[in-house]
Image (cartoon, rainbow, N blue to C red):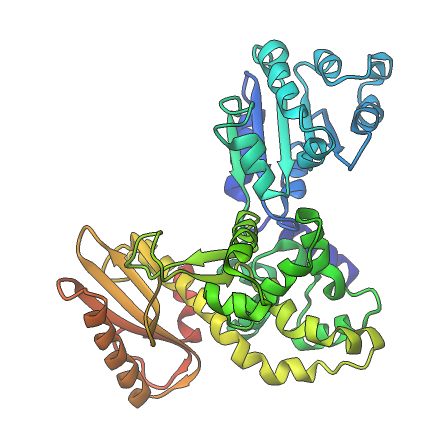
Length: 452
């Protein structure tokens, strides 16, 4: 059993990372200088990806901390290159000595927080010391906003110096089957509702899911209690207002006015908070798929399922969880309601995969939600050049033929409101279970189609 768990942990870390691993190894094998930037939210697997890529190569790996990084880097690098212990303590001297090596600096934003001038200093080092060498400098960062602004943006001193960048994203729903090959599709959706596609959370889950969750919540050291604070304190010095905004969105307050009323803030005050949450990718702003990004109909949504799960089930019950008296049955009783939104995310990935494989009437170029006043469509996929559209309703439940007909009729009305009369339109329904499957009607039993 222990051996089996160890093997699963190794497999899980690299599911759906083959392309990134190949791209990174290609850069490491090049005969020229490379400045590679790898970034993405915490727990996404950046460090594991890089350590796998440099396995078998001489390299220096340094995890930057909040202060005194010059001294700590020297101590760490000297274990690989003992002579570095006698080098003057500054970055330029270090890299003059470490030419042609693979140097990995994890959590590079910590260096920037300690000394904002370090970005300009690294630019000077690249230009004067490294650019004509075979050095491979790999910078990792969990602060998406800081990496984007301080390293990748046009105004960054390092702009134009990077030779490659990889933004790691959560894995897709269908890769969960590689993590849990014996789980049913229903159980995989349940797991996805907590973990999203975040490797750190997926590595913790065991099946049966509900048995594991019951045991995990009772653990005095469960990660579920303080994980959200851990994520937020890395990005924000004061988290109270940000948490209140996330709580509002997690409970269905999606418009700026609804969020503002929930948090009890003025419009001018809340705008910057929302922008910061978008920059750090805690939330995303969506507009109806038929409209441009500046549409005034924008709504805000939690980016990943773990945060939504936390605010719905963990945050309101922290006291009971701390006391060890919380009953996981309270989550199980409501979970089907919660999974409605989660399943929309899964269904969108399902349709996108079918489209990519040519199993739908046309290839999508754009996909998202659509709404107008009190009319909403879960998924609208478009090919604007070919004037083709596919509209789908998503239901986490059982649907009969009569309900399918009603859902299709609703979609037909939406087409008129959306101004797509000149489009060739197809309609579909995706449900947990469908009584009759004619035309574009799918349920969980059809999910394997997305993988073959």
